[in-house]
Image 1 (cartoon, rainbow, N blue to C red):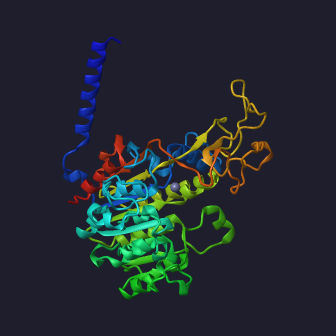
Image 2 (image 1 turned 60 degrees about the vertical axis):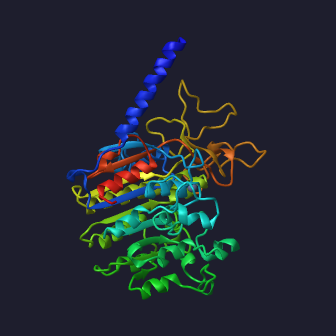
Image 3 (image 1 turned 180 degrees about the horizontal axis):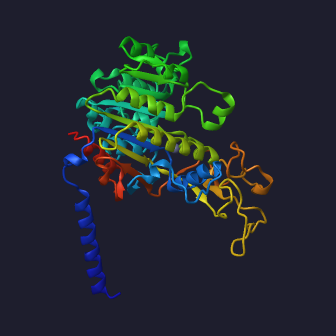
Length: 466
Ligand SMILES: [Zn+2]
């Protein structure tokens, strides 16, 4: 291409980019795009390959064809791809990712409820960089608000609804460095219950009790406070088991459920332990029941947190189980709500390095490449090729050792770590775009190539928040 035509092409490309940027700035929502309620589902680490593998896995579990299957939300009418980068990184972590979705501002990896002017670990920089979260805006307008997560409720994604902090690690006062304590910094658990009652969430269900209770009661808190007792004293209901959750009174308005000291249990260990902790779907249903009493509507965020936790450990089958559970929770939410007044969005904060290597139509997604004339069943090292594997993680062979032959392993064992190419104690998040699905009033805003802050804008406009 000559120099002149190159310049012209670049000018045309710039003009196209400008048009796209302008059309992305949609006007105010019309009546048809107004939602009474918004339910946001975040599959933590739920990249596109995870979704594809999970839909195949879900159907194969029932003896059906996997490739042509859809998870519940994959039938939603609206779909967009979302760029996930954070203020300082090509690849976001859950804190910056969730903050961008819940505040409309990108921030540094590890920070919550603040914009990009925050300084890492610096308490003094929080006040000038604090931005309101969607939950706080909704609460101010009189909506009920809630959060459900299979992680500790003080973990990064759920904390993005109520915490403003330069470090996601500061979950209890025991996690605060001395300088932060001296500077008057509040830990995340305390921020949830210490702020003005008018801004507090009405429903919080998940794990993480230890950050709320003092060391004398097997908790982590050093300040002697029992935040669960303070919640009860303020008139809220508090439950610790699935049975207690099931028998919560119908007219309960404020509900805190903490079902594990830290993160909740994944599906596989749960099956052997017979824990009396609710599943993601049961927590979602209860949260909607409680929040639906609000005449002004509600905002609920539901996080499938253990997808990410399983991926970090190279436990592919577990990640798929958790993705299927998220799809069930979405289906339950859809069944309980009116599509005319409830916007449901399903998104992810970032992806993980899961790869689908191939396979015949009827090969188990957990299995090995069967091989055919074009693609051999054995790799150059003479060993079988797993269908699912990771770019990085603890599933890599010990440093200096060769990979085991997956043909010698029980690939259906949910505790088997899937092969990873790069050895890491915990798999790295990956930076490709993630998919976002939407249905209900205002869902038309989810389309094309988007950004996390644009997903925030879609929810803010649908609820007509300032
Ligand atoms: Zn993660």
